Image 1 (cartoon, rainbow, N blue to C red):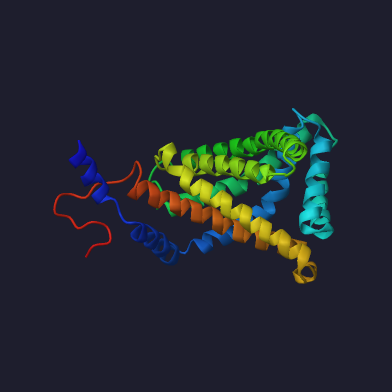
Image 2 (cartoon, one colour):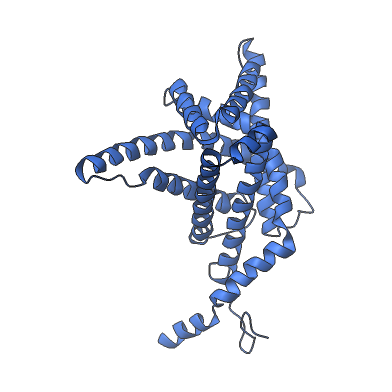
Length: 301
């Protein structure tokens, strides 16, 4: 038993080879192009996704209170310009879904759902590209319909995630107050809660969106890394906006440019996590293939 374990450990690639492969994939496969496409779709799907998500969350909670909390946090982080731009986008979307006959409202909501699902459809395409999933020769229509249906479900999932996030935020704020009263300091429980939820969300997407069979245990390293990097990147953006002349440059660039740039860099972080998941799965996880006897180990020439 011990010798078998030693052989398996010996077959594992070293840490240097592991990160070298991630770097080579990033350089050779150019996921930055996929990130640009994701940013484009994200910009146009952002308002429908937020609107439908809050509508779904409003089934369980006070929608007006959720929106007020969302825009308060957004204005504090990125300034009133970006918050007002997003508010205007949501008002335009809400205008297409309000009033009128039932049939017209249902049709309007369907097209909103179609627009919102576009970013998840593109996410699925991007993850399939990361995994090098070939386009099927047959059944393309059925596959497209299945992917679109799954994208619809992802939009609904975002709404449910908002409910969970609101509950986490309430609990984290209560615990922060308790720690301050009892111990005299406040831990960053809100940040921890955000990273936890983002890790869960990314893990689900890395597992379910690509058309490959991945074990659940393979997705958490990439999901946790992407969630942590995204939290760090968001914190840096907030710091620069609040404490440097970068804020005036952002205002001059315009709110939509700010959103597009933010989506682009966040998409790169998301795809980095996907590549990390791929390499983890293929080299150390469930998709790992042990080299045959006499075959050079990874990294050997």
